[in-house]
Amino acid sequence: MTTFASTEVIEREAARVNAMHEHVKGEFKDKNNQTQHYKAKDPRFLLWVHCAFTDSFLKAHLALGYPIDKGADAYVSQWSKSAIPLGLKTAPQSVEELEATLDNFRKNDLRHSDRTDEVVKFILNPPFNGAGKYFYKLIANAAIATLDPRELKLLGLKKRSKIWLRISRVGLDIFLAILGSEPPAMVAAHARIKRLG
Figure: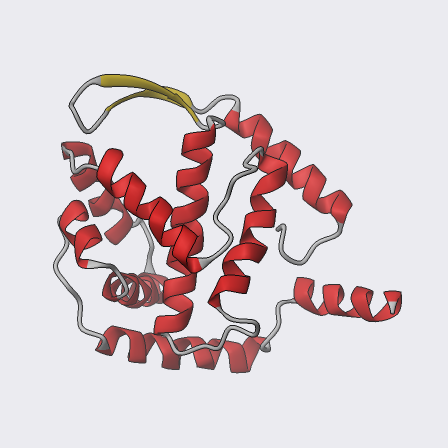
């Protein structure tokens, strides 16, 4: 929502997400198997979600062979702005900073647990029916093909062939041909920018 929307929409959506975050809290076992408390709005967790999201989209986009207009560093910097209304003021501004932040999480926070297996199983086998289930499986395997060996190990997954990326690219290109290369929000944003001069 924050990429191609008006300031009013961004503020409204950020308020909605922040309100949801108020209710997201609980406990988890840290890397030392100690029980810790968390809240979704804690800066460390906001940073993790933001970095994981940015990294996964960037790597998938590049692995699928799609261009990034102003380059990967600009992409990371632009996405950092999307996190500000959610309360995250210190998001990475470049690929190098993003990787350093993710390495810090790998070293200090991330671990495999029984819950990891449960979540991965659900993500790989969602309750979809029909063609959606097959398309999802295709995209999921392509996503796994983009993962770093450290993430594969952490998630208990086996490496996937890059062929999944090529097949996914064909499927996505067909969707783009049918739906158009720009989502309606992007078309509206470009029109707004053009009107403003």
